Amino acid sequence: MDQAGQSAWQRLRALPRPKLSELFAADGERLDQFATKLDLPGGAIRFDWSKTHLDSAHLAGFAELAEAMGFAERRAALFAGAVVNPSEGRAAEHTAERGVGKDSSVEEAAALHERMRLLVEAIHAGVLGDVRHLIHIGIGGSALGPALGIDALARDGALCDVHVVSNIDGCALEAAFAACDPATTLVAVASKTFTTTETMINAASALAWLGSNGVDDAYGRVIALTAAPDKAVEWGVDETRILPFPESVGGRYSLWSSIGFPIALAAGWDAFAEILKGAAAIDRHFRDSNGADNLPLRAAFADVLYTHLRGCQTRACFAYDERLRLLPSYLQQLEMESNGKSATIDGKPLEGSSAPITWGGVGTDAQHAVFQLLHQGTVLVPVDFIAAIQPGDDLDPAHHRNLLANCFGQGAALMAGRESADRARAYPGDRPSATILCDALNPATLGALIAFHEHRTFANAVLIGINPFDQFGVELGKEIAKSIEKGGARFDPSTEALLQAAGI
Picture 1 (cartoon, rainbow, N blue to C red):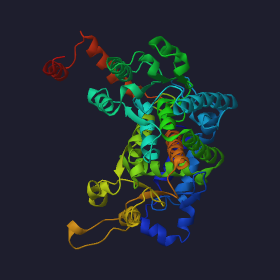
Picture 2: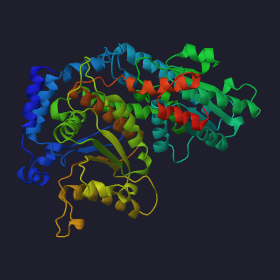
Picture 3: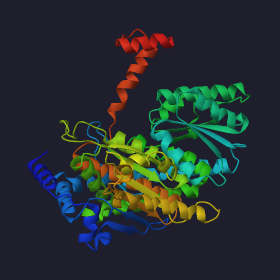
Picture 4: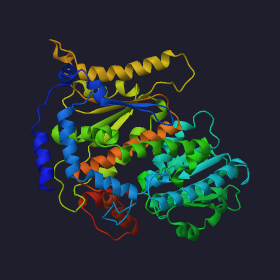
């Protein structure tokens, strides 16, 4: 880090630490400064960061840090399709999939989306026969995004019954088999390289299941979603059933590409197009807004405040909407695989903390499980609450009123606390939270929420000086697993004993 960056950090560390209640008392316009509503294609979303310890001095200090770390230049490179992943010499062009990016990449994405649309609509029209089920096989970003999208958007009568299978544990695949009729089932194999071990083993087992249940041409039931179409052809997939996506789209950023095929099949093409539209609106906001007016960057300011200045090792996300129950798991991969690094973008040791541990759950379930620690534990955990004003159900409105009352009440309680002579009943308060409140949860809103967190993750990476687009940390364990399968390798005594006990 250069002298400008070091100076910015020094000034940030020297800032006073007022309590949240003091920040509100001292600034009558705090809510106007830190709670911003964006009007988006799916309806407005309110981003309220007023219950965090950000203040005007922190905003100025972090803006200085962003300038020192080259935020504007790295953001411009991202949208220009330049190399922003130097360790692998790649661009990161997931925004082009949404129509915002380098012109040629946007045109390529539109052409590939059209190819996917034609296949989706052909399946819905019965051109491929009676298709009622899809077993979608992938792992990591090839599974988490589809699972989130389908669970959020296709609860009320899916156009196709989709089962997302990621785990190599055969129990996961058998559960999908039990729910599907082989005669009316397609299999989507989602792998960027079309070599992912877990995915290809599961795919082979799915083909065997089809064949053993009377399907003559099992390969004819396969749709390949990949950046390596030649590998899919070699494996046996018909070229007309391959939906490619660009090499410049990373796995955990691939929902917007053909990896989103199962969402389009379950919820309809129009819904998938709305997901892209909502994300593109956030792309334009992130590209065109500066300083604290840039909401993903403002969120990153708070994130870095807590990890670097307050020593927080975790950040929690609670969705007060059953349809977003998988969002915390999605964000775990997005944030921890992107920013869980110990080296800077230029290969030097990282100074200070990397990404915090992202975790969370769904409200109100989590209140009866983990909120005890959030309110009275000794660990400070910044919390994000996500909710929607319009309910997703048709039951008595009391359900949704109670849901939102709990969501807002938890944030208020974390901040306010309560004094008591009985230590067991005392709440220290001054515990930060942010709230993202949507008018409604719909495809465009979902796309906007995910894109917001993608750009927040990128902004965090820039502020601490790392590359969020490689993930070498996932490789070593996989290499050792392959060496175990191959046989002949020697390991530590504990691992050797485990292998012997398991008969491997």
